[in-house]
Image (cartoon, rainbow, N blue to C red; front, side, top):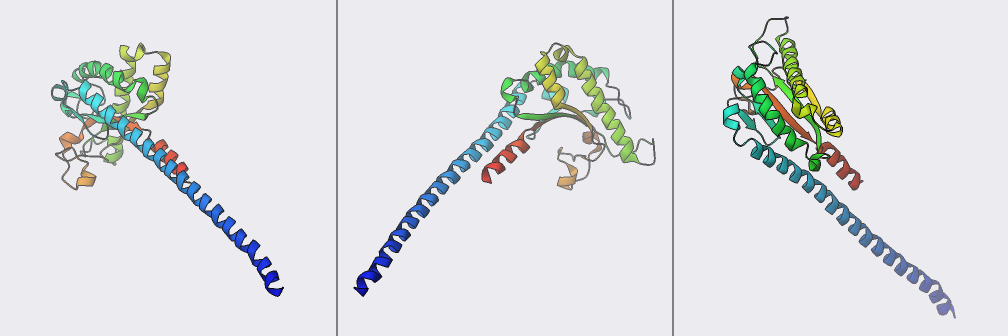
Length: 238
């Protein structure tokens, strides 16, 4: 009798352990399935981002394939288009756009806007920066040559943006397209903070000598929504 009573206490406990193991196994399988699902979602997010970036690069490359040489344009993998001939952009030390650069921009801007304003990129672009960059030569306005060149580069970027807004390719846009561009477009002056070397690589990174001629440039730089994409991916990890 004593043995029977002892067994009657252990049988329910064994059954409980079995149930707990089944529950734990089910939870583990469910968790693994959830992790796999989130991983697939993250992979798809990054894939979509990379495909959009590649598509933008390819379309810009195609749009300006006949113009790179004649306009001294350079398209980089970071989706920046550089105008690299300082002699045709602005007079030395001035921010007024030369007639020759105005002529180039008149042809450049409609092509550029026709690419970036496509509906498929509406949620892929976060910002379009018009950047002015100077060389390291002081222009003698104050005792701080970096700030002097900062003002000059900002004025140049702003004048390019103002010229864009004066063109029919902007004036004739639909209101929603204008609103989108006004949300995206910024004019930025970077002084000589991002000078480049003879290969157009940032001299800060390459540690090569600064090429002042190549450093004087204007860039149209597309910033994609990568930050939002990364935040979305991080949320899925939590």
